[in-house]
Length: 417
Image (cartoon, one colour):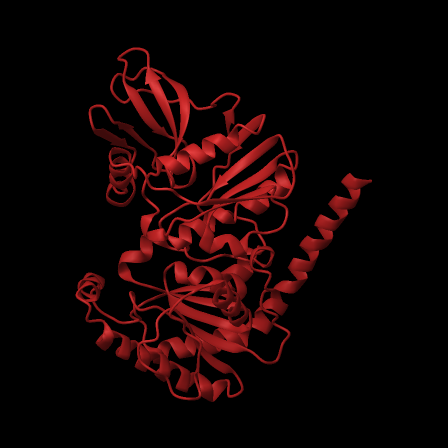
């Protein structure tokens, strides 16, 4: 975490002359938590990223006076750096952002976790940092800034929730009104720090967030679920061509092809798992499935729909889907996961999977990544082996797992005694 009150604990250098910058005040841009700093050498005023979320890896600096952007990575300029500079140059003046404040306890020392983003998956991943702060920083209250659409997932234990009415489509904008509201609320505390909001937190229990228990492998009844999405279908071919076609609003033919592939896959799997419930979940309802496939797709996701979907994921022995944020909650609740990877998404390997298995060997079995070009025939073979082989694989690993548990237990008794 980074202290911002009573002092701003941030050191950086001027992008113009290399001198040390002097932090003056905070600026809550939205996604970015910024420090407005001054250079005592060349007298530049620099809006400086705090290392929070994505900014920890690709921080930016912006000199508004000379309209110049400085970023650590050119690769992220189109979707991260340039939108940041544009938002500062074009603030949404006279736009009021409703911010609902819920207080659960009074604390004078707090950590603020900012979950504002323009992508659903990014906001969700930031939210998962809460569990770490509640366990590791009990002397601090946790204050959460969160888009209203994720309010339902906030776990117990936070001190305050500040829900903001910002649609994801406007998540990259800078709203001075919101900045002023946050600055005002921070005055109530003696000490304020900002969470680094790691993009991929390691340890958390998803059931603390969704209030839905993870998959029970002991249950005899289970689902096999395909996660449907309409902007990145399960099809072979050039991903850039698909993107162009989607923007041209002619996706129906692709979605009909995806429908046929899913149906073919399920027909093959039904021979091996006749009692399984074959389910399609996700967003979008283009095309229809045979009556024996449980179609749980939705057009709009609200709190009720999200909770229902999480229960469906938890009932799934296996979920299959094309790489993306649509795989976050399914992978966190289901027993096993297969992530279909488009060619252009291999650099983002594993970023859409919420691992709930700490043993590395079991993780390698439970979470698998396959090329998007895979055929229903080959995929069905892999699915059958993965589901049928799970009990044996786990049994083979159990003696070692039990040994580790016993060792950890003895260590706990030693230190507690």
